Length: 270
Image (cartoon, rainbow, N blue to C red; front, side, top):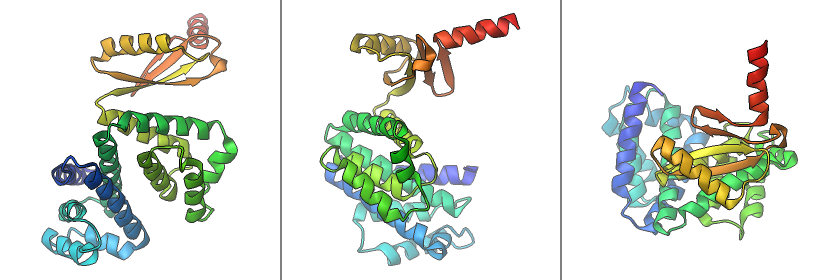
């Protein structure tokens, strides 16, 4: 994002914080309605462009959004939307992408209000791993040549009655508004967003073998000492490592695997 869009996004997020009242219902409704608004904007390019047209005063764009969506969404959602479209965006796409992010954050807020945020984070991570380990499922959910409704129905069948409502809502929106050929990455990003909402850092761990509960706790405690913040450890088993683990935290990579040590030795000898 360019500077103008970053500033617009920041102000829109402030509007979301002000609109959410600590009520699980308000947050869930706002998130779902923002996703519905995004669906309309994705489908109607002329409206999307009009709402982000910096040659038109922000107040006029806000009035347009109220004429289009007023009475169709809640007061909280309309307040967020009015603030967002009144900002100056570098690109119309930045406005829409920010509304997606705000919808995600509102739904995660609803999970936090109900004490289910940790469960949602874990489900999103595990869903991403399940998809990554099942090429046919990944293809079915990522194939943008298939009708959007078919992808949506598939994820709904997979998760209904097996996952938190927030997880289902986030997953459904992710597969219907697909912007990558790797849907597993999208779920990983959602899991990281949930961890950030809990004020935790995410450590993505590739291990030669499954880690025990005490091993995960010890690793988490060690990383917490390094980063000075609570750390959520997500583990993926990778037998090609031979032994040990590779830990990625943001851009930091800590390679303690046998493969990594052998590679360092090979480079030293070459």
